[in-house]
Image 1 (cartoon, rainbow over the protein chains, first blue to last red):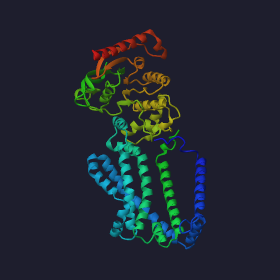
Image 2: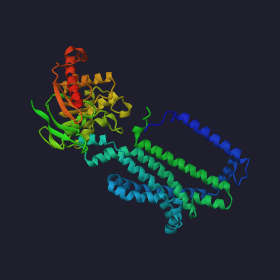
Image 3: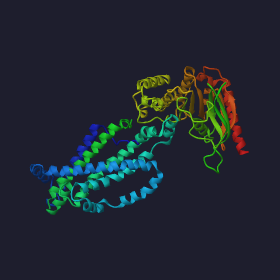
Image 4: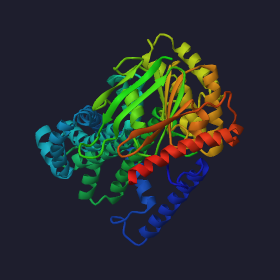
Length: 261
Length: 258
């Protein structure tokens, strides 16, 4: 799985491109903001001022940020913890796969937005319902990629290792797991990002804390600047998660680092 | 001479109503000899190799290695596949010592590493121990695969078109390496190829196979002297032997269309 030509420039080039893109977005935003009142599109300056106000109120914003962060992370861990063993079982036993997969597909087809209110009714307004919603959203991509990844094993490599005298256990740990990692990491990346969405959707359905709750609350008071602050915080969280997964990927799979060469 | 590989009247069909992959195949490989199986693609040469490796079992007939029917462990038999089949997440050294790791008693990794380094020296690879397979050229990867096959001091090497994907010059280099390695550490070799020149250059005996169904058409004894050098290929003796292999192949095709 090589990256297409021209995808990754040198480090400096990438940072430059990123900065340039940031400047463009900022300018377009600032330009458009002059055309509309603040309650529709607040200018960057207004948003920064609102953010400063929030930070001056002590731990107010931090509490909301931390709440969503914890919900997303715990949800992701719960979802992944359930998905990984199941993906192993499904990859190993095709018959079980035929039995379980239709159920999984059916459950996956239900929009999480529609499930969230039910979870709030069952598990309450607090953290638990949000964690479960985040876990549900993270669960499916990890499961699917886990199954696909574990099945990805090159049968010729498997035969080679068998001739070398490898048992089932050795084939699993020395062949199937490492060859599943690239695909699996794709699932983890998606799952982690989706768990943030899950947490926010959960907060929309009833909560007293969290960035999603802030957005919900700000809508009621037409505090559009506050919505922007919350959205930027969510974006930052997403980028942070992305970077963490990328770093982990590089640590766990050092052999893929220079595969462009 | 002791027979180390015996294939007795083996028939194998992957799909029931088609012509079988292999039909009534008999083959004996003697200790220390290098035998090449030549034939068109799809004549079941590789299948025959997998039968000997023990990953397939025949529908009829039997395959014996060292007089035994059960599949052998790595230490006595090893394989060099066409596209090296190295594990991409392992560095070269870890790829080479894999057979030792799978069969050893985990007590002495240092010793495995020493043996892996020795195997890499044997195939003339230096300074690549810490590289990943994708950082090597195709020829170097094949050398690593060869080192991995030699690391356990196997008595039988099964080579499945090991040089087919290489350019002509790299291939010639590796031919010479094979001849040199055989002098240094004798082994019994069974190699599948569709390159007649390669077969005649390397082998003590060339067995020609035909397709649909896969069967043995005949064999040519290669009594060219050792050590062999590349210029041997331009001698009349060499040409005559290539000619007789081609004759056998041709007869197989004529029989098919008759």
